[in-house]
Picture 1 (cartoon, one colour):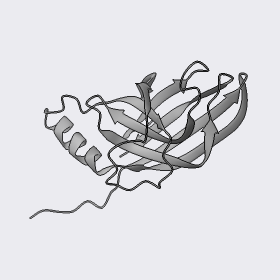
Picture 2 (spheres, helix red, strand yellow):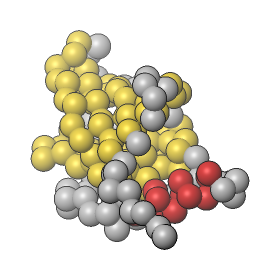
Picture 3 (tube, rainbow, N blue to C red):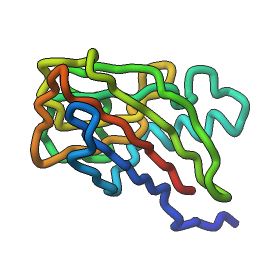
Amino acid sequence: MFFKDDTTIQGALILRIRRGGVLVEEQKEPNMIMDVAKDALSRLIAGDGAGKAVTAIGFGIGGVPPTPADQSLTSPYTKTLSGHTYPARGQVRFEWALSTGEANGMAIREFGLVTSDGLLFARKVRAAAIEKADDISLDGSWTIIF
């Protein structure tokens, strides 16, 4: 007999926006975990997880609300995560930063965690775009909770 566990994977994105090094906005919001994340996790725990580890964050321009079937960001700028920690049992927190010299000219509305083989693991969309310029930097963390 199989038992269904109704526990869902959750995520929380912390976003800090700085202009000229001064904090101008900070948000903490939930995000959506994509369907492919479940496949990536099942492969990881079975030892077949080559390419399934979350290693990057992506920034995109799309404004369509997330759905579990999403597979990519719109016109993404992707970079390696700064690091990760385990803040509590069943949690992993990914640290990230986007410097003043990166992604300038983008109207950033979406964020995504990306696996090393390019799968979109989690996605968050903002209502208002961040007009990325050379005096704006972004940083934050993204916590996945099991």
